[in-house]
Image (cartoon, rainbow, N blue to C red):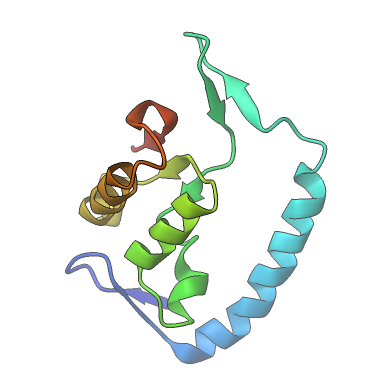
Length: 122
């Protein structure tokens, strides 16, 4: 359904798949929003630091924006600007360089400190 270009992080997404999946994503996001309203927003780690339990996934979470002509880099910028502080990535996604660049741009803007961010990888 999605064709991910393994030559570094940008997706070639079939427009038909985008059109079909936008409705699915909208329904899923609506259901998720209803379920998390009463849920704890952070989890306390063993060292006492509180980490957001909902993170921005860099494998498929950004596909919705790709359908609108945006890139993973754009999606990360938007996610960080709107308050995401937990970013999920992995070596096999081949996008850790894009994640690192977006995080560095955000930190350089002075809108957060490194200790405010949780970059989770596998």
